[in-house]
Image: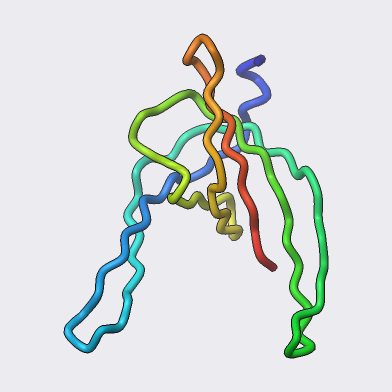
Length: 105
């Protein structure tokens, strides 16, 4: 990959869940790092839920330099968008990682 294509700034977020004393689950995020990335939109889908709400799902592929401090349960932000990481695919050389992500809009 040409490093010049990595022109977008994304923030990697670690997601953790905890259960409070009343049994409610609380989701919190913390910043892992802000890095340069190549962000590509792959597909977009719309569907209607049983409650007649319309939702859209957009799939992205985000390429970053390989790191070891994140996994597929984490999130990332790109501008005002929050993307859920679905899969982390590392290349053979261990230099780059492709994050398969989705955004629900």
